Structure formats: C-alpha cells, structure tokens
Length: 122
Length: 113
Image (tube, rainbow over all chains, first blue to last red):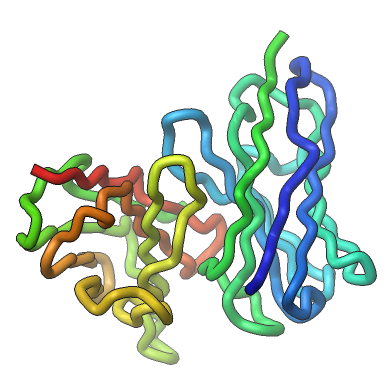
C-alpha cells in the first residue's frame, strides 16, 4: 500500500520560514510526479506546487510563487516544501499527493498523506 | 486561472436516494488531441485526506463503488451517487488538471436527511 507521511508542521511567526517533508514508501518514488495541496481550516482544497518525477520541472500556485520551493531527493524517497516569508494566510493543513501516472506530470492525485498542520501566527 | 464552480454548496438526501453534484469550469477542460476531459472528483470525509473517486470525468478509480459515476464534457460535469449510503457523508470536490494552476471547486457538503 502506497504510503506518504508528512512532517515538519508547527507554529511559526509571520515572515519566518519552515520546511515540510513527505516521506514516501511502498512505491517507486523516483517514477512519479508529486504535489503539495493545502487546506485552510474549514476551507476547501488549494493546489500549491508540483515537481516532476526527476525534479527537472516545478510549478507553483501564484499565491506561493517566489516564497515556496518544492524539491525532492529521490535517493531518500522524500519530497520537500521550503516555505519562506510565511503569511497568516498560509495557515493550513499541507498534504503531499502522488500524481497518478509514471513519468508524467499527472494532475490528478491517487494517493494522499494525512497532512501536517502549519499555523502562522504572532 | 480556470475557475471551478460547484452546485449546490450543500445537499441533503435520504438514504437510498440519488445525489447529484454539478461542477462548471470557466473554460473547457477537454483536450481535443486525445478527446479527454481533464476533470476529477474527490471525496473528503471529516478528519481525513481527500480520496480520488473519478478521473477523466467518468473513469471510476479502482475500489470505488459503482454507485458513484461521473459524466459531462467541456465545461459542465456531474457526479452522481445512485443510491446514497450512510458512509457517503462527506465533502465532494471537483478538480481540473487541464493546466496549472490545478484548481478545485469550493466543495459540496453531502448529508443524510
């Protein structure tokens, strides 16, 4: 069973930085694009960022472009999200999710982690 | 950006009855070269991550009960639950993956009458 486990969430002051991790297991991580999707408390889903299977291509939502960086280490089966210049509106549960198709930038997500909560507050 | 609009925002249906959720995109998500609609549906139960139900607008994900079906093309889509079960209480989201930024509808909360 595919497994994605996020970590690194917590409480952080506005303007500070945080790095999230997503540990993948039970599938060939290096063959799949992966995404970050967030959900503010009581709100809907917002796609945040995507990285291709080989790490060569990255895409971002306008709301985080220039502040967040997605990366991956295929040797460690781990996805990252470096979040800088955090704002109160970045408060959300952050999910990592796997794109469906191998070697493609699949935009639909067949497996999700349980999420990690990031709270930006002074 | 492609804006996804779902209707209704909430829905109350009796057990065994049909539930219908609509989703409209601000531009077509039909890719002409392969005739596929880049539209998915997700179910999110309280305290859980979303779960993929439908992709390519009408293809049911493995393991999803056949009471769930998707239809539509271009800009107008529908998720239908043919006979509502108690375990179907959830929020349902449509999502376009035609182009980044991938965007979701605002969600439809489904409850039992």
